[in-house]
Length: 277
Ligand code: URA
Image 1: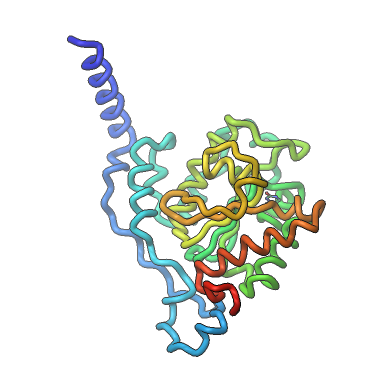
Image 2: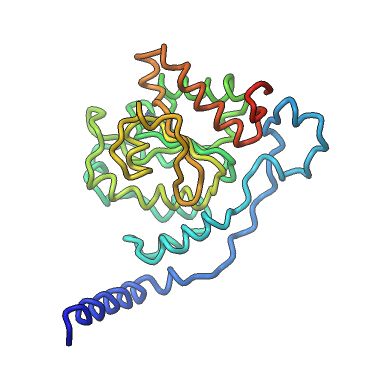
């Protein structure tokens, strides 16, 4: 028997063993659960305002996109957490994560900071990880940087914070706000992937170096990545500066605004030529 055949047989046998453990998670063809009726609050751009209003629920929330569903499907085959792909709602996902002890950050946290906002949002923001205030309150982006993010969403984009979905790459605060370590990211990233698949937004905004590098799996500095569309799990994604960086370097708010305008164009919130909205 050739070495190649040995290796192939070994990997097939590993794969069958994993399927056995997961109870054929990865082969699941169950349709997505029906989504609740959408809120009516997602603003429309000035030029859209005159057009016939779409049926309630058609604008504010995103449909389950085929690429995201596909990403969820294929991602499930090799999920490190058997059963993760069976979670069909954010509530089920949160329950699945439970009182997580899958990495060493568990011992330091007050609250696991899962995510917040519209579970069917068209727009999702992904930050790095909770800071002190987020750890204390159990909600992402509620400190100073969070207030700036809320301003960007509400005053800049004309949306309500509750209309978008906000979460982080890692769900527990690292001690002294140090950078998350690779094993911590590896333990948490499957949950972010599942959050993305379940919310299935039309656009993701990656906030800062860490989120961008984790989401796009590349080491390019944020200063070079920002403003350039990427794709994550079949979804358009825009890297931009982190609001905490903007607190230190307010002159760069101008660049974030350029990136946010691109996001707004894709969502139909301003004219593609950039003059309206
Ligand atoms: N910074 C982040 O990246 N996430 C938060 O939730 C708060 C601050």
